[in-house]
Image (cartoon, rainbow, N blue to C red; front, top):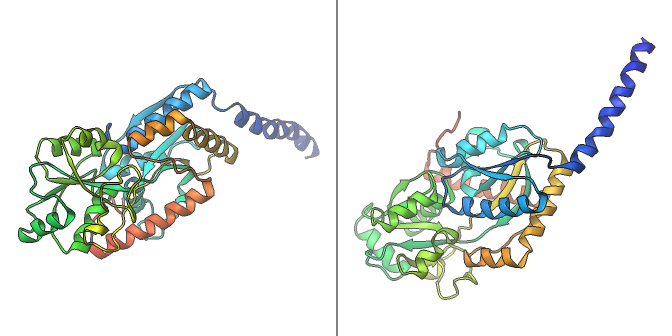
Length: 328
């Protein structure tokens, strides 16, 4: 018996010695960053900024893999099941986690750390309430008046049922006591395309997606969804200023890895991404998109996600919103 133990001990010591070396050398090959929405949306745009800089910094490819569907739930669940080795990351958002939480924790007690190792938030900007120029409204109050006059006559696009763009609209309906027609898409990008074409009337959109279109006069911004005016849109009032006192909807974007990813790899990723967000040109790029870096520690990000999911889960229950894939 002692002989067998003595043979196994060196192998065990070798394995223990190799673990920190593997983390120290990370990454040694291509990293896949899953974006659970179609190209062109806020999650995709910010993910590509981070992926490009990580590739440059580490000399290893960081490739974006768009996996849209089920309001972001398909790609999010796929990332949760990936190997916890640091080579699959998830660029997530409010809506993607909401969509996934309905199936990952159908009993309603979602704890992000059971499924993911949060790395850091990237940005947490307010959304913009934007309309097609043909909609006869210049203020939030005008829009509410139109919606009340003809229930469900105004359509709003979203990146899927249960996503932040949809929940922002659902909260607007509840607070304004109006009925809108939600048209879900597989990402913000396709929804913006239809908004430009006049096939839908309005959206609650990440500013990252519509900034250039606003500057070109192709869309009109009525309000921002934060508690106070955005420093990037100082002349655009908040929804609350438009009459819905207390209305607030902020969508976050952030990086996660599968649960049980080694803590030292999570820490290395956190340090790298936080440093990238502090680069002047990256901050300038994000500012042009209406986003401001919101770096957090993994622990802070975990608490933030859990509180956010709890907030929106209460609205989902109250409004009887059926999240795609719930219970699967």
